[in-house]
Length: 292
Ligand SMILES: NC(=O)c1ccc[n+]([C@@H]2O[C@H](COP(=O)([O-])OP(=O)(O)OC[C@H]3O[C@@H](n4cnc5c(N)ncnc54)[C@H](OP(=O)(O)O)[C@@H]3O)[C@@H](O)[C@H]2O)c1
Image 1 (tube, rainbow, N blue to C red):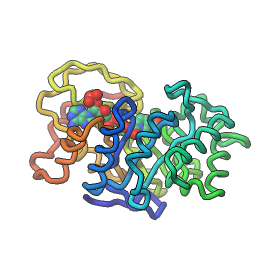
Image 2 (cartoon, helix red, strand yellow):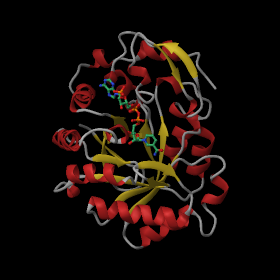
Image 3 (cartoon, rainbow, N blue to C red):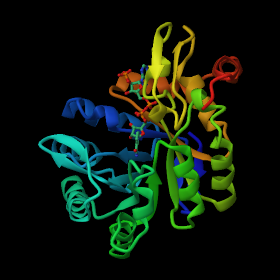
């Protein structure tokens, strides 16, 4: 496993990170097994996306005893609505949800506090007095968060966020489909220049790229701005997806979402296979005409 600098944070993150969105519906045993397996294979970056109690309790069991080995991202911007996650921009709800997250996970702080699901509508209010960013800063002052980030599924918002001078990290979907997304290059270059940690999400476009030999619909939120309908090549592999994202200058960590140890194992093959098996040049060619 290679460890990369996460922007200017001083944190060194494993090039593959663990996304936990799809563990939401899995059992406690699976969640524990996936986390243990990830740690065994030197993954040190774990993303904790929601503040739903049942999901957090399963993750808490997985991270118990491993806090010091992990770089944890927690999110601000959803609440627990009777076992489902619901987006909220209400400051009190976000505050309560984050504190509940720390308490259920039995941790004192998150390494990165990420303001999630930022849309064009959210952006103007985000940095205002009394806004979500101010709340994140207050948690940082209290030592409950080391660094502050933003995640968005829209490239122009991502560019504005990294140019704001206010955040340490940005989470954005990066995969073959958005190879020619206009603005993506600017985002990557700005992250490098300003030393903002770029956490790449959706390397498999939310799993769509691994539905091989099937015609899939890929939505804008899975690519940061491009939607398409396409038959996926039968021989596309997870390691090609991971290798592609990892090869892009500016990317610190590729967050792969998995729902089982088997999927994680398949993805970890990236670490051991020969370069010729990880070669992705034909796929750049395959997706080269898809643009926004
Ligand atoms: N902050 C935010 O707003 C935000 C938003 C999105 C994601 N994230 C984070 O980023 C992480 C990664 O994004 P993502 O999970 O949405 O997308 P992704 O990594 O592109 O896709 C994940 C899905 O791909 C499929 N998959 C993974 N490995 C596989 C394998 N070896 N073989 C077959 N299928 C496989 C699984 O779904 P199936 O098995 O069902 O096909 C899995 O759930 C998330 O888990 C989350 O932690 C954050």
